[in-house]
Image 1 (spheres, rainbow, N blue to C red):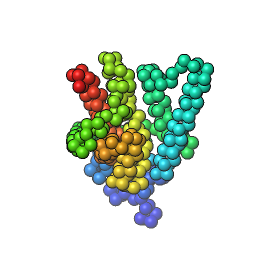
Image 2: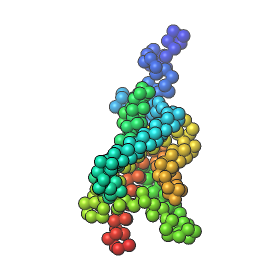
Image 3: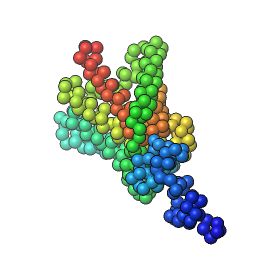
Image 4: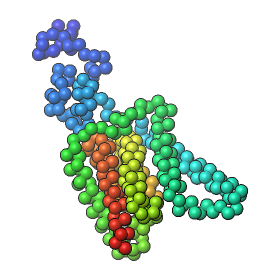
Amino acid sequence: MDEQFPNMSAADGGPLIVPEGQEHSGYDLLTGPEDQEHSGYDLLTGPEDQRRSGGVPMPDTVPWGWRDVLIVIALIILTFVLTVVIIQLALGLVSAYLPDFDASTLGDSVAVNIALTFLQWAIVLGVTLIYLKIRGYPVNARIMGFRRTRFWRALGLLVVVLVITLSFEVIYNLLILRLFGEGNLPSDVPSQQVTSLFGTSAAALVLTFVIVALITPVVEELFFRGFVHRALEQQFGFLAGGSLSATVFMVAHFDPRLFPPIFVLGFGLAYLVHRTGSIWSSIGGHFLINALGVISQFLNLGSGQ
């Protein structure tokens, strides 16, 4: 009897027909999602998706690997270099035909700064998505890390990560101040001076907040945690993968004075994704960090510091 019906249900006394491809999936067809919640399945990465799909777990892995990450990073760097060359050539041509044109004044233009910011995002995300499409990898919100998660647990983990990150930043700033003086503080890095982007007016505060605190976290987390970190963690495990993705995040901010706090922040955000299974948690942490930075700089301006 067992040989004739290898999928015999002991409870029913009759054969259980298993859909093709699910025989070795580890999913118990005799139990539904409610029973599976007590079977060791990670509640943070899929019960909602299970219920929507009839109880069959949806894939939590990414199809790309560390080699794809390296290729995409190289392509992004190459695209940035080519873009800078093209812009410089264009400015040179404009200056040749318009002797009164001063390219150095473009950095003071709000419109130019906005355009360059959006161009940067377009290159990073555009190159990544085009590469994934060319390779034939599936690309959707879920596979990039936009998944549901337990809100209160994610919030608790987020608070812990932010406390550790901000505490390290304070200690690091005190150490730099003591060893090298105030002029070497990470807050003096030009790229960190967000008030220089769009001015210091009330309208500039709103514009800076929207771009730096709202849009930037989504774009950066989609790339650094959704694309880079998930592939590296899947390949090398969390500690190595999280460290590598934090290193990529760190180097992307260029200035060595920023490296230690940015690395700690990158690792903390990777930890949030690791524990919650969703990049919404890292987007939330990134948003709070950037929002605090924007608000503090404008408050310092208002106080005359």
